[in-house]
Length: 204
Picture (cartoon, rainbow, N blue to C red):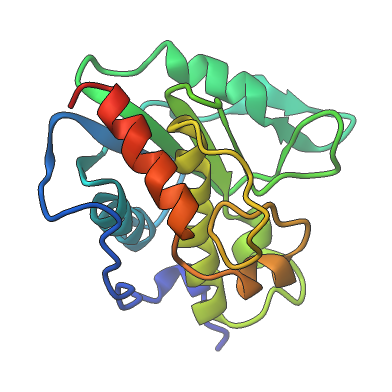
C-alpha cells in the first residue's frame, strides 16, 4: 500500500532563534489552511514561524476555497488575486498572514510559483503542489523542509525582505526544487538585521 505523504507526522526542525528569546507582545501571525491541509503541516509551519519571527502564531481558516482565482486556460490559481482577498479578511490582531494551499499557483509572467507575498504588506501564500506532490519531488523529508523554507521565505517578504544573493539564505530566489533543497533553513546575517529593523519599525 502506498503511503500518503500528508499522513506522516514530521519531527519539528531544530530551533534557530533569529531574534532574542523575547516574544513580541503585539499581534499574531496567522497560518491559514485553504482546503484540506493536514494539521501537522500547519503545526510545523506555525512552530517554525514563531521561533524565527518571535510572534505568537495561530492556525485559522479564512478562506474555504480559492476557486475565484482559478484560471481555466492555465489550470492554475492566480496567487495575487488570492492575496488581495485574504487582505480583506484579516482579523484585527493579525499582523501578518500566511495561507497554505495544495493548488498550483501562478503569476502571469511565470509558469508557476511556490508562493507569493505582498512586499512589505500583510498577506502571503504558499502552494504545496510542487513542493510535495510534483513528479520526482523526492523524499518526504525533503518536502517537509521545503514547506518550512518557502513559508518563512514568503513571510519574510511581508517584513520587507527582498531576494538575497546568498544561495544559502532562506530569502534566496529559487527557480527549481534543487535550489530550495540547496539553501539552508536560516537567514543570512544581513537578512537577520533587515528583519530585526523591520520588526522594530512596527513599534512592537
